[in-house]
Image 1 (cartoon, rainbow, N blue to C red):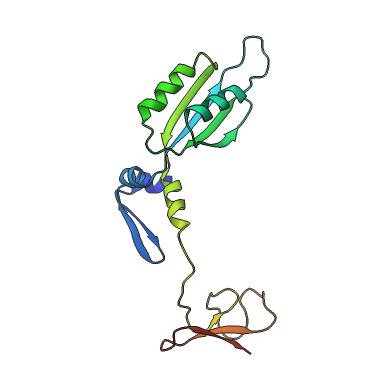
Image 2: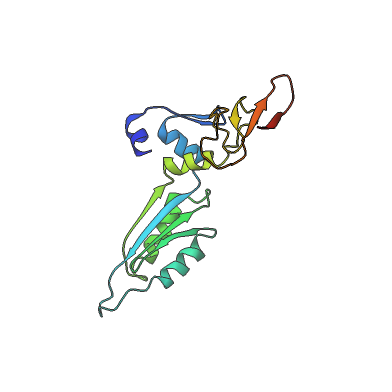
Length: 173
């Protein structure tokens, strides 16, 4: 998706063979994003001990209700802030107050990526309701009537779709 953002001026996303959105990468992220990504790194304590992220995690979870912890390491935390009404100014304001208290070395806040927008659309994809005649009943890939293309089924069962009928029929050979 990074290539799409870099090379395309307009992007369309299709679900079930129909366009669901069309626009610039920034337009799609603005319209269909679900919050922000917060990444914070804690500095090494003065005494040389291992840093503890638990206090920072508690702070973030209290300040940004409904946020999801995506990743945690010895010195860093990565959260998805799902509250779409939360403004960037408010997020930055809360993180600035926490810098000295939690020894935050670095933090960043970013938009939901175009890839995450695409994945959200892809979740709504459903299998086709109309199946072509001659498709394998196990995989629906149209592998022909001689044998199953994936060898999943020992019996040769195929789908025959009658365009005049309202449903497909399974045929055992």
